[in-house]
Image (cartoon, rainbow, N blue to C red; front, side, top):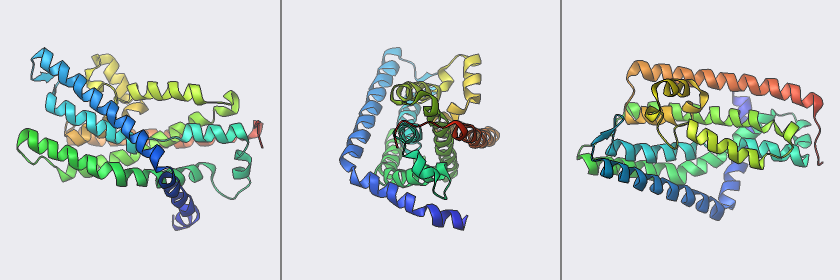
Length: 272
C-alpha cells in the first residue's frame, strides 16, 4: 500500500492542481448543479403544499428537503468522469503513452480524480453539510446530528465513489469499439442519475420495481448513502446495504480487468 501511494501520489497532486487551475469552470459547474438542486426543492415543496398531506410515501417535507440536498452533495462528491476521460485517451491515441509506463492504467485515473474530489470536498462538502444541519435544527428545533450515521454515511459515500469510478472505467472501455463517447456518455449519465435515486427516491417506485432497483449497482451510488444519512435504515439494513456496495465494487473491479485484458489485445486508436 505504501508503494502504491508513493507511485500514484503525484497523480493526486496533479488532479488537485488541475481542478484549482480551471476554478472558474469548476465554480460554474457547481453553480449549475446547485441551481438544479433548488429547482427540485421548489418542485417538491409545491407537491407537499398542493397535496396537503404531512407525509408522502414515508417522507415528510423536511425529510424530502434533506434528501434533495444530501443526494446532490453525494452526487457531486462521488461523481466520476472516468468514462469520458478514458474514451478521450482511446480516441486521440494518448492511451498508448500510458500503456508503456510501469503503472496500472486505472490507478492513474483513480488517483488523479481523488485530487479533484479533494478540491470538491474542500469547497462544497463541508459548507453544504453544515448548511443542511443548520436547516434541520431550524426546522425541528432539535440538534439532529448523529455522529454514528454520519460516519457510516462517509464509509458508504467512499464505496459509492469507487463503484462509480470503476463502473465508468468499464463504460469508457467501450470507446475501443464506439471510438467517441460524448453522446452516449450523456445518455448514460441521465439513466444512471434516475436509477440511482438522484432524481426521485427509489422508495417512491412501485414495490416490485423498487426492490429490483435497490439490488442494482446504481442504488449504491446515491440512494443508499442518503438513506443511511437520513437514519431511515436500521442496523441490519445498513449492514446489508454496505455489503451490497462491497459486492458491486468487487464486481466492477473484476469486470474492468477482464474488459481491459480483452480490449488491449485488439486495440486500435485513431490518434497517436
